[in-house]
Picture (cartoon, rainbow, N blue to C red):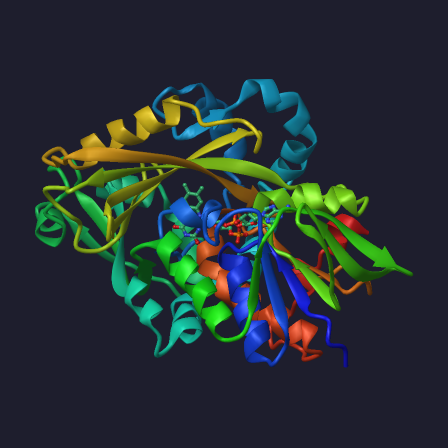
Length: 414
Ligand SMILES: Cc1cc2nc3c(=O)[nH]c(=O)nc-3n(C[C@H](O)[C@H](O)[C@H](O)COP(=O)(O)OP(=O)(O)OC[C@H]3O[C@@H](n4cnc5c(N)ncnc54)[C@H](O)[C@@H]3O)c2cc1C
């Protein structure tokens, strides 16, 4: 045994969950972040516990649809063209998964990370104040028409592999279900037994506070390097000094790419930048969260207002926000909710950390004592608690009851 702590780098959903589980297993844990906990991608997401999000963006139809989507000003896919040449190697690998066999493989490997997400969140917070941020709900996929729903049959065949079969609502019954939707919307596909978070930033901030109250340490510091001695992690160098550790866990979202570089590893991690708009003091709220399929944005009735979040902008994680995705989100929200009025809006951009095969890197880098927990693309809020539990089990020397080989970092670091 050693009295040096395990250092967890990055206090987003994945890092705070990992620190919490390690603490529960009796370890001394230090959580570090360059900012306040929960202020990265985990802050502004759609807040959906998306147990159903098993189908990756790289569906077989992507080859057919991507060029059209990139050129259509109404499409939720954007590209920062100046970054395109730098992104090409990642894009080539990403697109290599856009076929049926790869999609089925990815779906079967995302299911164990997602299928019990609501329960995983609840077991992270059971009996604590943070429980109030987790809501059980139904979840609706919003379609223009039954034909529009039927055209999405490939995605539904993938969800069926996870045991998810929707109830279909059509015609005027749509507005009886969700009065906020305009009369142009004629079809909903509704899933029971789902969940959502009503303030992700606050939820994570409170989880981090609870971790400290239970004896954990939080250090506000920017990690600059991970120092190894004879191949084993020994110290973490930060802008606040150097800290000894027995093990380190990198849960730094998109910024994990920069930390991997320090270790001499060129991990193919790029960001799908995403945006949200919060409609403050809305005149209407949906009864349950939903996904407006044509605009590819999530809708969540949150504590601070009605949040619409989505769009994918392929680009750089150092560049600031663009205006066009926000304009489009607002326009699509107006189309879906024509009678919505509100007192003002808040806008945000964040970085989804995405790998070419749409699976995170969860595991140890060789026998270095350095573990990875990043690359959760569109589903890191959903799968963070499960990731944290799996990492804590691995660090504790227990074999998780999930086959970890699909997530092994070695597939991109060997
Ligand atoms: C618009 C949008 C909508 C989304 N909707 C959903 C959704 O509904 N459901 C869902 O499951 N997922 C959703 N996601 C994805 C989800 O937000 C991410 O997958 C998830 O937040 C990633 O969590 P993380 O802990 O890996 O990273 P982050 O939350 O980004 O946390 C990383 C942390 O590391 C810290 N850090 C980085 N570098 C350093 C360093 N050198 N030293 C110290 N600290 C460092 C950062 O400050 C940050 O706090 C959405 C994302 C976006 C952008």
